[in-house]
Length: 296
Ligand SMILES: Cc1cc2nc3c(=O)[nH]c(=O)nc-3n(C[C@H](O)[C@H](O)[C@H](O)COP(=O)(O)OP(=O)(O)OC[C@H]3O[C@@H](n4cnc5c(N)ncnc54)[C@H](O)[C@@H]3O)c2cc1C
Image (tube, rainbow, N blue to C red; front, side, top):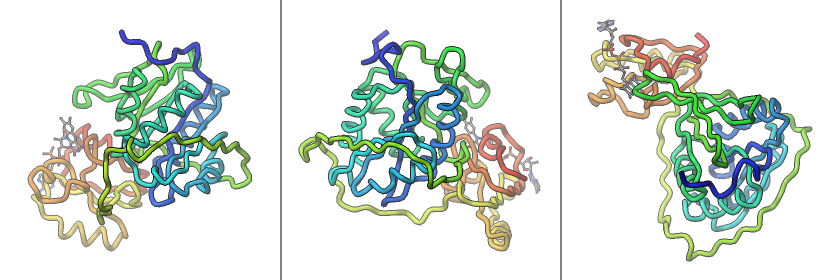
């Protein structure tokens, strides 16, 4: 087995969270990770560190501290203004090799997945992708990642004994964000960025932001399954009256009745609405996993 670039004996007792931001706003998944990371760090008596990359993002470090980070490492540079895997991968690698954290967590978002995959290969470590739960083994201090496998038939608890950092990605909506405390104190560390334009092979010509729906933010989700036979008009009306969003199971999405971004479940979105109403769905485990934290 290939050895990772540093060992458990060399690790610093800290949990790192990749603080994803877009347009100067911390992504919800970063706040969710800060809350979960805080709980795990407290259980271990470890430090919770945020890694913040971008251009003009220093002010977000204070926000991350308010949301429970002990320390935020900030790399602020014009070349980090847009996410490119060359730039973000390089800077995150530099930071990780400097401080050698025990755990590195990233959102299972398009950019978070990209970054985590690149780093895991470069650091010769493992990556537990798309975890549905995380916890620390309090006796051994090893991260336990819960991963569902074989189409949801198996729940695997994965521990990385010899490789560091212990990496995992989790989709938005799995953990709950905490409340900010603006009086919290923490440390902000500026990371010297060693980047040149030549190192970045991706050229971003235009940034197009879709007007897509974000089911993770909806307080009410009205889901239509195969049983509604592709008729979403009434559900749309109800969702509008309840100020909610329409969701779907997989069959109507596969049949082209509704957009893929509205799919709830293991391969769709994991959401946590206050109210969920499901019509014409059988409650398959792959669907339920995306809804089981609904309040009602
Ligand atoms: C790896 C993997 C990942 C998957 N990921 C997802 C995922 O993310 N999301 C997802 O949804 N699925 C996912 N699936 C598919 C999943 O296993 C189910 O097949 C799917 O959720 C079933 O959708 P359904 O409940 O709409 O359809 P069905 O199971 O066919 O249920 C339809 C229901 O509608 C009822 N019905 C029919 N007609 C009427 C009527 N007139 N009035 C009232 N009720 C009626 C039927 O009795 C039935 O209970 C995944 C599968 C795999 C293998």
